[in-house]
View 1 (cartoon, one colour):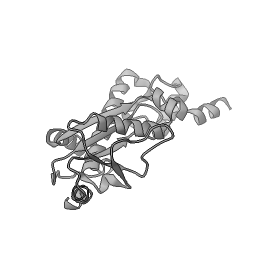
View 2 (cartoon, one colour):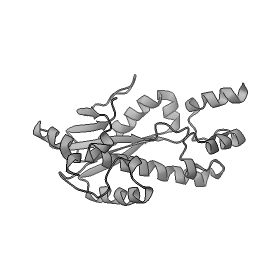
View 3 (tube, one colour):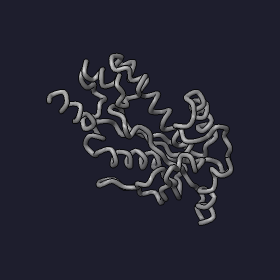
Length: 208
């Protein structure tokens, strides 16, 4: 667990005090918002099983979700809805979701560790002082915590949407382009929460 604090400690040695980790979830699905979370953890906090959300079982993610919210100095979750994704494109929407999450933190961070290698799109750039970290969700405690909050928040939202639109089985695929999801699209067409810009190939195939 100690190695998960290397990046935060390096930033502290450079004079930063409040360091947040930021990550997003749901860039790839055909439906639903893209979510992002930002988290400032108490220095050196150790949480069992904290890791990239994709490496953690759903049950442990739920436990970690509560622990992170309880123990964080600050945390925030933000999202960008499908219609905004269609207007902006997914890269800009990801940046917007992450900046919205960081802007919602109280206290505000003076530095951010951002998962991935992108910090701007054509229309949206991250404004919080930051560095990007490839595979950050398995290298930084703060980013790993953010990845858990973003993933669990998005999954729970998609489970709610499954109740609203039961014919799409959103609780089973969370909006990702699975065989089941495409079969539901073929049968029922798009729902109000589908990303139209993500369905162009499907629509072309359908009308071709």
